[in-house]
Length: 205
Image (cartoon, rainbow, N blue to C red; front, side):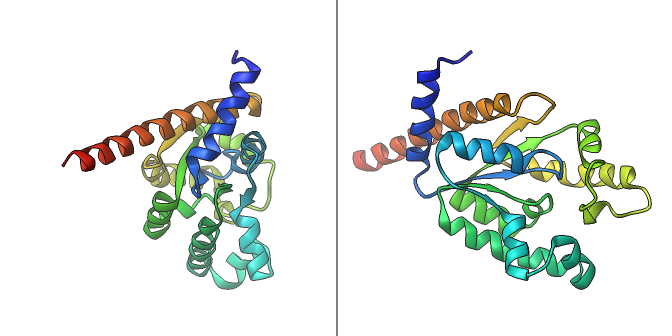
């Protein structure tokens, strides 16, 4: 168990190291991006933003309504625009929809202006969680279980491009937040060392 004072110190150091970058949560529906993201933002004392909520506000309708009225390509184009705009507002914890990271331009924008974290959840965990929800347009098919398996097969190799991977499972959210904080701290420290090395090399040449 980490010492409370050490946790506070580490949490304060992370926003300083982030600068204007966002912590961007990616992963499947049901992975816990919103619920864990809110607790992560509280720990870091930076804002939490849910991209899906922002998309609904911009469109004036719910995501299922956008899918039904305009179709998925229209939704994905709008999603990419909203996320690009949100990334200008860091530092923040930004939860993205399950399909957002699949778009190349969004991955590039996240790489330039954020640190991406894949909340990776096993199939059984996802299925159990999403069965409790009825607002998942991607799963409104004749066989949601098969659809979920197909989405996992398609998306997981792309999610794996994220900077950090943390396993989302049925443990207290605080446990997962703690693992994210540790991974973030390590990632940012490593990035700082690389930057210092490049600058040192530049001064020496």
